[in-house]
Image (cartoon, one colour):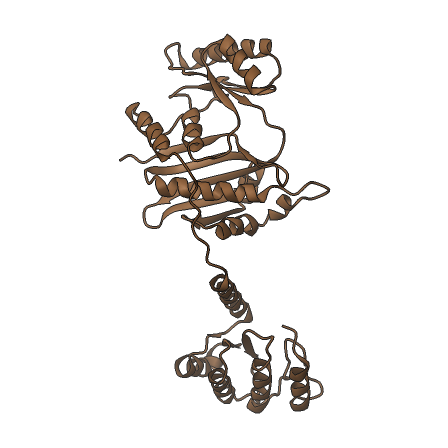
Amino acid sequence: AKFQDYTTKSLRFQLPPTSNLKNPVDVIGDARHDRYRAALDAVTADEGVDQVLVVVTPQSMTNLMEIAEVIGEGKQFTDKPVSACLMGLEDVAPAIELLQKKFGVPTYRFPENAMKALTAKAKFGEWVRSPVQEYQQFDVNREGTIGVFDEERRGGRNQLVEIKALEALRHYGFPLVPYSLATSADEAASSAEQIGYPVVMKISGPKILHKTDVGGVRLNLRDAESVRQAYDAIIASVRSKMGQEVEIWGVLIQKMLPPGKEIILGMTRDPRFGPLLMFGLGGIYTEALRDVAFRLAPIRKNVASEMVTSIRSYRLLQGVRGEAPSDTSAIAECLMRLSQFVTDNPNVKELDINPLIVYARGSGAMVADARIILSES
């Protein structure tokens, strides 16, 4: 805080000429209790000060008990939080006990711990004073999602096939990459024409979990003939590596998206606390930086926005080296939809949206892939 003029004048009148009269105030190492009282009274009276930390570094002439009494009494005459930091070990123990037991003053031995506590207190105050927001309820088709889950369970599957995971999310209004399931080469070409080139093709089947390992993925296909050839090649490759009897539903045709920022959204259900949401930058950033944010669902809009801005790499979403800022509002909306999805459906054990491709501000985001695991019961 920057002190008011009247605070500076009061400090100048009562403290030695060598004292620092700006924040933080230095009462000089040889200070007696009366100097601490003068400084504390002046600072707590300043309308620009929200809370006060008194740091005492004991000198040979310091009477810690007298100073502790001054700090405790000063706390009683202000409605602003007053904390103390008495630096030392055994020599400061009696004064700390006095401050804590008689006056209820939060007291620390090291300034780093004190500042962490004061920062947390300030953030909590901001949260308390922030406008109360209702949980946003989107217009969704929960019955449609439940139907997808029931169908998968009847098939003996707790981990949803990708196309089924996308279908479950579609009922909750997530922005999905245009897709279609083709069961022949000609149908694949027709679907690609409708979706628009270039396209991505992925094998789809209940037992095929690692598509790339069995040659089940083709990228950047730009015409109908390439799509037909890719369809036949994918089916042949999967059967040769997994056996001719492997169950294949078809090939998933998806629009190949232009480059954007890769984001990962997720949820794991803690048996004690419930659904825990996760957000972070995807791709190499998730693995290399472990830079993610967690919050318990359900969340409000302000919490979703705070999740986005809380990660260390948020600067990359703001735009660097001439890049346009990313559409963080679209990310926050997806987080709120995810919150509603996992709150409405307690049988969802784990969920990953990876990647969510985010574009420039105002251009939205697209879910490119998803994984959903249901609970056993």
